[in-house]
Image (cartoon, rainbow, N blue to C red; front, side, top):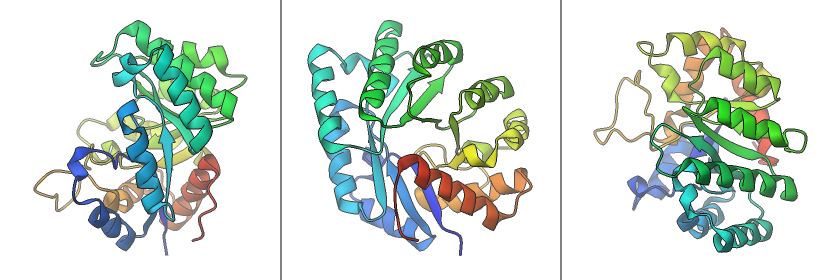
Length: 266
């Protein structure tokens, strides 16, 4: 039996409001037994922690500030998040990184928030849960500044080029793949480049409720992605990589457990 670990579930999203128990139950029924609950803003800290307490037998969680919300970090809030992370010890720091596609926070604030969260990960010996969109060169510059001390990191929701992939792998970063891979119309280069990801550096995710796989035969009317669709993504990636699905799942499950330092019992 294949067991799955969704490394990116935005369970705090309002799109899951009132239906979280059902979403998790549906995931478990598809053998998506484990999931990482992602935090993206200061406003979510308590809620994400509470959700992990609620589903902790099957979950782990990150704490951090998404680049969209980098403007939230100032001297006082930085002290607060440092204390919060030290007390509650999440499985990773993030979601952090750079996003110049929408620029919802200023360039300066994004760089500062990214660097401060890298420092927090180093101080607490926690891996980084990373986000990068339209900011690769600056992202790599910041990573390189601390590369010797970063415990570990995963670039989640990878949709980039072979050049970008090479940069991540050269820095010993993990790579997370989403349902974005399931769109053969727009992702020919991506679907080809993932064949070059070493199996011991690969993880899979839904990034739900976002990025519903295009190739699903029956999509929900609300077009909401859910962790129950992770097996579909796994099958797509394994097929593209020409790897037996059982072998593929075993490796990515072990990668995920090792990265988040989780001892879930299968």
